[in-house]
Image 1 (cartoon, one colour):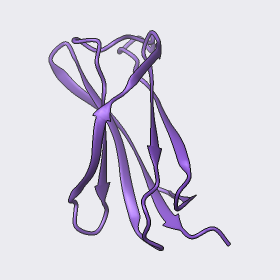
Image 2 (cartoon, one colour; image 1 turned 90 degrees about the vertical axis):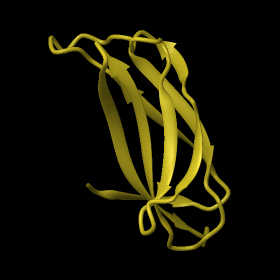
Image 3 (cartoon, rainbow, N blue to C red; image 1 turned 180 degrees about the vertical axis):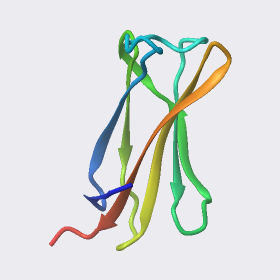
Length: 98
């Protein structure tokens, strides 16, 4: 998984699309998706929240990057479809703005 650089103090938008086996956008079972952030090194959970539904199968969460130069975070959005979990993840590395 590639790592994207983000800047401390910036608010970033993490957007995820969820599709069924036919590649059609679908909402999760409970119409809710959960956003979580983990510290890549310790796997400690840093943040969590309910994602905002933009349209069928498309969700977003706005997260403010905490202080800590060089820390790598895992951003994850997850939900259940037909009682089975699905998730989208990316890695980001926090940097102080030059």
